[in-house]
Image: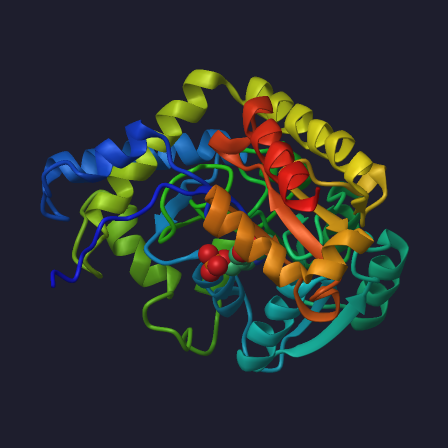
Length: 372
Ligand SMILES: Cc1ncc(COP(=O)(O)O)c(C=O)c1O
């Protein structure tokens, strides 16, 4: 039997990946080029330009890292932290927790500021921790995919910079779905993923580093412990006049990202953000009569990831059973809860291509049938 068998077309309404449009899938099937082919290097340069528009930054060191969002997170933290450095990490879900763990493994002294899952970080609590710890780095998550909370960035970033800290922001779920303004917010390192609101395949992590961040990397006394993620080595392939081999770039994934960026830029960011906001609202309104209640207060809610408490009918049937039936009978994937929210919530993604009224209506129709 061939290893590759036919693959079903699913509607991906979980926490990512989202569905890729035909243009992205077509781009990924184009002929391979060598990673040092001048044509391919020119394409990489255009991808970097596109990413700068999405991140709203002039940072020259903006590139598609050849690995998933978690590697973007590691790249940001291991380059900026040396053993013994202090970092304040805001934790209001799984991914803030992951940042703290990466920082610990990099040998940093970690202070966490925790917020109840389903709420945003308190800027005052972050400011107090920054004052007490006087950290080299402050890190937090813009769009917490484990809870569906959107974190206001400005106030925390400002306090961090006033205290002389570098600011790291996780934009994995927010990029291309709601405004990300690295330069206006004063962010020094940010990372994202291609499988969420960009609607490309998983496997790349767009990252961006400010000049301040690069100066910090230059003045390190210990080498970055990760060879693969060492920014100064990555720069030899991604930046500078002469490009040399560092690793073999994932050619097809970068073609896909190029097509995804073209689609985002053709739509225009304001229209894309409005489309995500509309779809998120339509979903919440449509779910309420079925007994699903939003976990997150309206002001803090992400449009591209809605977390909802489950109605009695879903609990009766078993939430995992209902999700399995959605997948088997309707080809629709939604996500379950993580950590303390496992079994308590569902996480429904309306990311990129899927942030559309007809997609919301297809899910609501399937749920009505299943819960009847
Ligand atoms: C907010 C956030 N950060 C980091 C990650 C890690 O990204 P990846 O799974 O692509 O490694 C995710 C993935 O869902 C995420 O949602």
